[in-house]
Image (tube, rainbow, N blue to C red; front, side, top):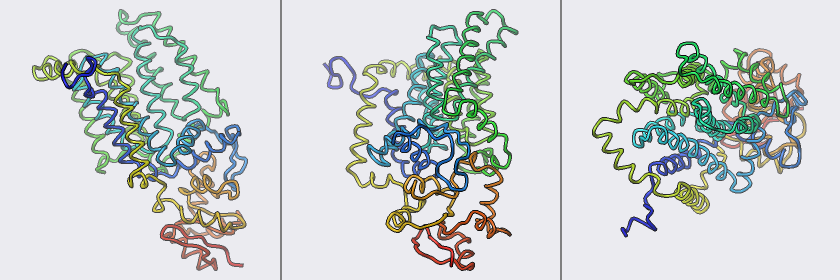
Length: 492
């Protein structure tokens, strides 16, 4: 028995294992960025904490005094619970580990299913890793990571459904029920199934021999089922209203960095541009046409990504799944065939969960015992960590004004003692209120009236904001400051 075999099993990781390990390790390395690049995560933690304290998901705002009681659609309440549980276990390190597991599992599932469909390992591996690299533009510890995993599962299930394979139909409403309560991007799953039905109609009209009537009925039935399930959430139909109202508001969309189209003059979007070019090349050299359903899926999500950079993580999942169907054009190339033959001898030689389990266990141990683990925290460079700690010991009376990006963190650490002025939940505050907020932070004419109208008594804002000097000029005085934040009170 060779030294590299135990009980007849190869002990080296397969490409499937390598895909999981490489993505998981990349997430750990990017952990500080994933925790701090966006201010939404603490808000999700605050909601998760609230629910785990024995409360129902809030359907009205409870965190601010400016919009207290306003309608609130908790699309992401379940992801907040899961993130908070990971926080309870390992603090911020637990959130990063969970994020790594979600992302690594997502692309490993895409890889495994793609290999099963094509029997191509090496080329599929690089295609899937490329998709992961594209999606890394939006690797942030937020609920969309759950959407990526659910989307991968959804694509695999819908491909089986639409190709006439046997798959229990009850899988779909159960998954959509989960998705609908974990993230607002459940609409991506709805669009995938709709594209499958559209592809079936296309075949029925233009190539009827490929359009099985029973398959079309099953896809249509699933679409009806999941549409009905989308209203089973804490706010029922209001979940759809919130999504459509947000996407239909030009002001809110244009003032959110991640919702504007990708700017290919920026270096970070070059990986997306390269993958788009690769997709055109692979489609051009493909000998047989793609199934109509996959053409609709790829075209639709490509368009969504070009219209809004926030969809890049979805494209990174969808594109490899669809484009793997184009790789048949290269499978007869001699060097490709030989390489595939070599790796096929080793693939599936070890149970899949062994190497990923080892990687996750070692990662947890490393984070718990090394100095690197200490860097996985909410950074004082981005959040008012020290100021909030000071406020716990020196609570301030009256209404607070705060930075938009800090609202979630303040709620997570100080609610219910302190209610915020604003946070990143734009659908709660609305365009008119956000315009008032912007008038204050840009010191536009009438900014003092906004603070007076909301009876603001003190402010927790970035130290370097011009508003700091403007408030001091209006007679406000400093009660606390550090390198990141300053707390000012209105003069008597």
